[in-house]
Image (cartoon, rainbow, N blue to C red):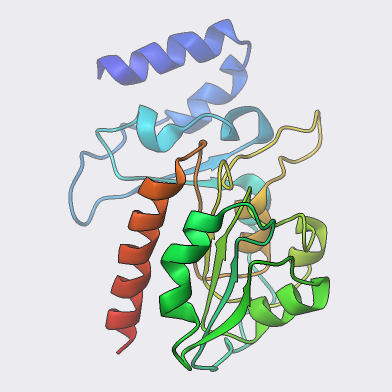
Length: 220
């Protein structure tokens, strides 16, 4: 397709053509309910938004370093029945706090902190002892518990990291790329929802509320 050829030409101009054959060695599948194109990408290629570029296919991107089989497969996920949350930890997202407070502070299904910064131990407990972790603040929350420490955890909760560019992957020279999605995946989170770019609080709060309610309804 034209889109794919344009991407190939652009990448070759950026001197990463030695890896292109590995990515495009076969035609990617057309979009369908049961057809997925999985790309195992190096640090040079992972920073590109392949899910958007290859919009004809259902694309899943995984860094090569995460393709190694885990030795933690026998560990069970936490069976707690509450949702943990960190909302407005910086104290300046007052509208976000106002929108979520009625939901999270009036139900025994939620446990967390709102309107203040959590301690490292609190975030650690939230990630390892709840069925779902919700972060609504600036960035992805790594200011309160570093990605280095998160990546060393074992089987953390599914996570919603709802902050500006919370899913941004950072290139660090010849080293492996870094970012919240990579750290959480290393820690065997079943899924991580992040934002690739900056977002406005009103729109993303509405999306998050619908997503959260949908997940809770599915869980029963």
